[in-house]
Image (cartoon, rainbow, N blue to C red; front, side, top):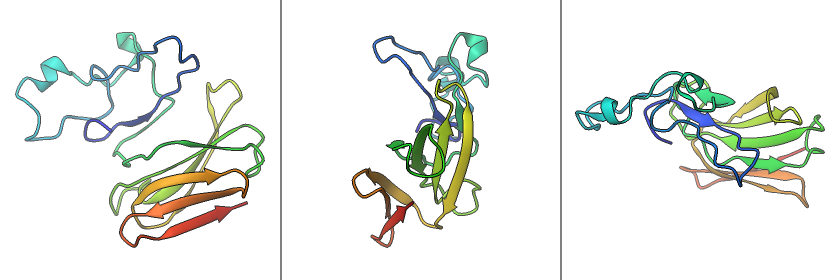
Length: 153
């Protein structure tokens, strides 16, 4: 989470080598009106390109933002794919296309492209998700109702 809009999914394939994804020089979001310092765009210009300024482009970004949660890995046997299979959730507000949902994202084996995406619209802010490998279930914690939703395959 950073600016207004522009939540990103970035992939760093080598944690021993520092990857630079551009924050706060590049972002697809904007500074929050009335909350940013007068010189915010001088110190953090939020260019709409990462690669043009020497940074790594996100593999996916959201405008408007979705209030993305952590990303959790699911085993390749969860679902129809035998690739790099992940889930995340969103906490953003009613009326936003990708908000209030649990999302599945599947990457190519080299993590250079997205080969499949899906979402389950729950209509509530999802605070946290957890994958229980032994039970092959994804657990989503809903913020307002204090509910737990189990998603199995």
